[in-house]
Length: 293
Image (tube, rainbow, N blue to C red; front, side, top):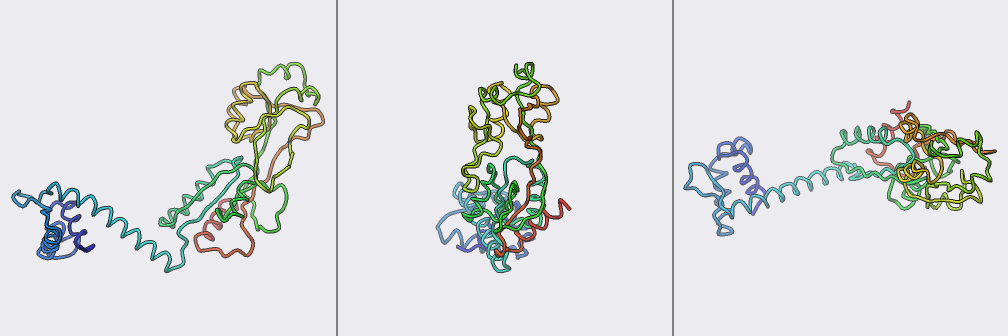
């Protein structure tokens, strides 16, 4: 059995005739006919019913045709991989981003990279807080998009966007009717909904947490928003996730005594300094940079 024989089989079936297969493969009709006959003789099977006006697959032929398509697709994939390796292109590039930011601008850039390098697999991970940094250190991601609360010496970075956070509560909360600015002692009796960040870099950080208050921990922003909207707690949320809820009046800003508003957080694209970068990883970095210049 050879790949040429399987190509002949597929070309006849998909073209509908020996003539069409001959044009597709740029081989003579007798050459293609001999390839199929040799394949039949090798396995002592009849692939085509030649008693019909057109070559029709026998039941055995149908089974072989389906398998032949898989083998030929895998062979093509092998060729593409070998080519990528020969020219030094990465077979995959991984990106990890913080879940607090809008996904659209990230996917727009990734889509452009995929158009330019269709054979490279792009893996995308969404993690809370500094979670993407753990993936970088574990070798699972090469480009990060993370909040830039403090500079990290091992990383080089470029500005990506600013994300604005708001402290909010359900608009139906009695706190809004009783107080313009809620005292901390009063608010400690209400659950603060906090997004869990289990990354090594964020361990033991209490940024934005009301000390001594009741807490409700969740692992994604959608759940956090739903809990707050149900009137079960209060917390900080990215403004882009709650624009509609603020507009229709189901969520409202919450002012807290002596509490500094979270405001805007800078988000930067980052990668390890002096780490070897392949051509596709470099192109992706360049596309992110160009999209925010």
